[in-house]
Length: 246
Image (tube, rainbow, N blue to C red):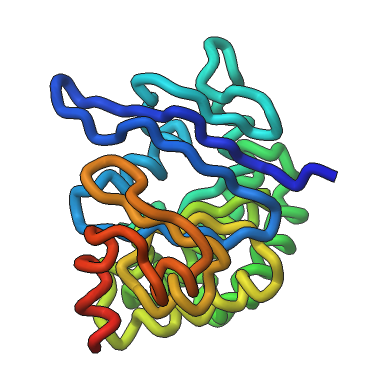
């Protein structure tokens, strides 16, 4: 049985004359936890935004179960309901309660009735430890709490793949752990995840696949023990040297 969910083929992205991604190829299979690492400006977040069709690739293909989602006429909203995204800056609706943030997408996109959506939302808010805060507005929450709500909101859509765009980089250091704990739990349960991260310990210990990007290309990829333990390329060695020596 083919467990491949996403195939990225020869993906490139330019903004005007500035090429941000060049000829990106990799595959995401069911249950994979893929961490994308690299210096700021290497194209990691742009890659994730292309995969979720928040940016249109300049060229190349993104195959979801063999279908090219960048082809003309493809139903992008339906695809996005299967490929969830957790953003660096939370992107919660500030005028809605925690619970309503986790209900609205289910009702509008998945066409669930409100009670069914509420029960499903509560299941995931409990999972991430945010059930006591269901009536709070985002402004009443810490950064770590907001991000846990954002994770619950994404999970409530029952995505097949969950994309994380630097989910801890906007958090105070003491709040990073609570979000990483949730993500570790999801990985242990077999959630397919694609994570852009600066958290090298997470990439090394939780992922089964690591992609190192440099200047818009995939410089090196492989199992964490290979990339972290025995990087082949000089650029990878240089990038990881600070982490490996710390």
